[in-house]
Image (tube, rainbow, N blue to C red):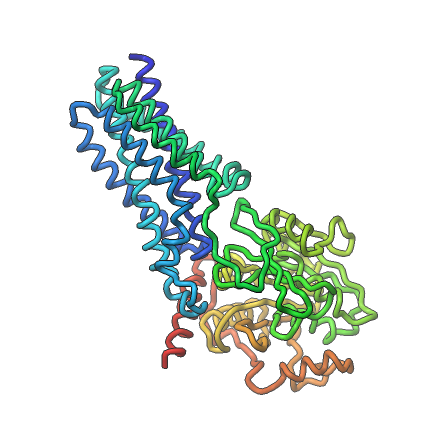
Length: 529
């Protein structure tokens, strides 16, 4: 009887671990298609909680059966099969609710509901099966060990919770980064299959346990099948891909451009990118917002020694552009924060990010707000380019409190440049971020539209007003730079922002994700008019 008690508690422990593994890895399966925003996380967590509730109810009813141990074994096997099928079916299911031919604006409106529908299809079956396990284990333990319901339930809850704790840390820090999303699901499925067969043979003493061994086939047979990922366009070649603690990352090369370009993509499903690499440092082709980050060095040419801070360094695109396009007499050094070490690793391997370069210090695994908070009066130019999934600006990097920290981190008359995605100067995201920035800096903010893109660059200065097209300092005397600035100075390509124009975002109340969804919804409605 003691052996049976240990086995039942082990089943509860492993099932708890597998439940957290499926819940945490679920977002990683969806993120290449839908991103990893709060809406996606909410949908996944909501579906898992719904499924567990259903499972508890089904398990409670099933526990009244003559042989609950046999039902427990079969449900474990079912959970194993459902879990193993998640990475295999994810691409097909995602494309049902987010077709590949949609534009970013069209797809953005489908992300909240599409991720909910995909979560229901992919995660409801295995999580429901896992929810059945606790009440069944409680009933089996109470009968076999002759314990009271409270005693048996307490032991099962303790084992299940400890398993959930172990599964949380193992999934986030070991399984997904080391073996990837697909193998994480398959390891969990193999563990459930093994316990299912053991429960049928050891607890139920059923010959059907031999038949249930087929549950092993799904995890083992799918071991080498990777999870489906968004397809590349025909002219692009995959150079490297990996799963980090935070996201899915890949490097692709575009053979259809001149010069040849490489892109670092993070959880991307719309053929977009986080960073771009060109063989030579300096300006990128027209339409890349990184080129605008160079302008403050030309507008403030009397400053010949620049310390540049980059929040959201990515693969170091901002640094390569500035280093290659700066004024000849200007010395530059950079300190960049990139929260994902895997991004830094791939960038050094494929995109020429410096290694231990005194001119470019890379803070790997470092949050951008920590960089700004530690840099009082340190920077001549701060660049904020922290993005994920094309539209998602982190809330803690878009608040008035953070922008005030940025102002404190700048030297006198220093510059802050922010990349913001939107569909016009009246876009709710552009307006909110710009007005929040103006409130923090107590000065007007200059907004520049990036040609042939949906990007805007906002400029603010500490204790000074940014340079604008009417100002004499707008022209630099350099023909190439002035040609670029002339295009930017055309009517409709720039404007001032005041603090009173839009909602001010704070650490306490920052609806940036809702504003981003509204931005895409308005763009879609305009396209339909």
